[in-house]
Every structure is written in C-alpha cells, then in structure tokens.
Length: 81
Image 1 (tube, one colour):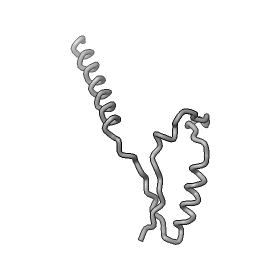
Image 2 (spheres, one colour):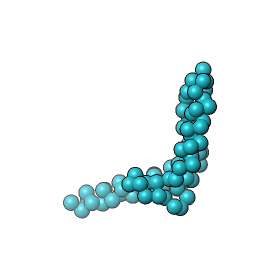
Image 3 (cartoon, rainbow, N blue to C red):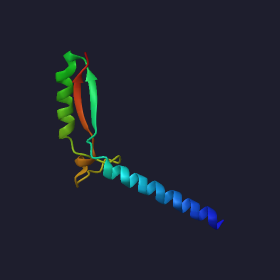
C-alpha cells in the first residue's frame, strides 16, 4: 500500500513538472485563424473588433480584472481562396 502511494505521488509530481515545463517553453503566441470567403473578410474583421472590445469574463460571467487578455490566443480572419 505504501508503494502505491509513493508511485502515485511520483506520477503526480512528474505530471506537474511536465506541465510547468511546457508552460515555460511555450513562448510562441497562439493564433487562431478563421478562414472566410474573400467577400466576408470585412465582416469577420468587424466582428472580431467588436468582440475584442468586450470585457473578459469567466464562465460564470464575473469580470476578470488582472491581465486576463495576456493568456488568450490571438484571432485573425484570413481570406480562404
């Protein structure tokens, strides 16, 4: 039983260390591309501009006050040819 507890603790610590390492090494900003028809490109950009002006909130609807935008991925509209 003690061996199981030790192995479980080691697995948890390894997972936490791996997650922390990926967070530190992942310096590339994430950018989501929305592909639209060329005729809809202006509408897509207007919509993204409107959404960008909205406050950042949690799933419950409470506002996030401290640098929440820094963790969000970037979004761009791309004309799909």
